[in-house]
Length: 417
Image 1 (cartoon, rainbow, N blue to C red):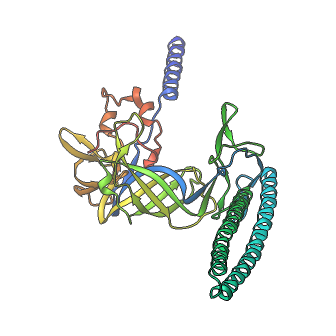
Image 2: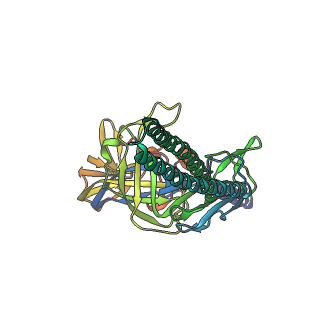
């Protein structure tokens, strides 16, 4: 009798252990569900892009050879309009200006002397011509020879007057030309000297650009000798920020200027900004160099200023294409296609055939089949029936990334329409 009792105890222990181990290694999960809602459905077009300033100015090196940077405003600093941004070594320009100013003074002195000489000669020649005229007037009625001599002296005085004045006038013109050339050189030297300090034409944040130096690309810094006209500093005006993105040519017709936009930033995930489409490209372009996809450029302006917005931030924009008021809507992943019919599954796994309407990137309109308060499944419950692909062996994959009550995204579902 005791033998059978011991045997029964062993069987119970073994069976209990097996069931306990099996229960330990057998995973279960709650069917993820959500509620069909009645309300507004926002039809939107999603695009991604990069934050940039609506207005920016690139400061370039003056078109002067032999430049060397001696000072730059700190990168990231905010510059006001008129603030100095970058300075170059002005030693050579100052020396040239001094030389040209000296040359100008000499030319001006020469011109002054020529003008004085012209005045003196003009008076002397006029005086000689007057004397010749008076002598002729006195002798023209005397003996013919004396009269002829007096006439010839008058003609000679007149010719001498014109010839010498023309010569002196030419010398004055040459002196004036030398003065003008010297003034132009002084003005050029002054302009070049002024370009040795570049001020901010607009308010903005100082951003150093990369330049080619020593066989490598690197950010510009003090001591560099840039090429004439080379871009050195970008000055974006952060008071007006935009998102530069692109929409595929298939969806381009949905997007137009004036549409409301909701903007999310990877760098500021806890905040959503509002904006508006301000520009859509008129011509399509290739998405990438080797891409076959055509896109249209889109610019979205922020409605408000925010010091946290910086150029280069990644942005995701939801452009509001339309708003459907008072409709039944469900998540896209809760709608399945079964044998040519569009269906959803209630929480009790009952299949309901539905008619769908318009859709956004996350939700879809239900035209008939639901009232708007039903609990529905976010995964196909029929895949969990024994012997089907959703059996217990595949349960970990089914639950991957999914939490109860509809949180997260179902990794496995039927095809949406």
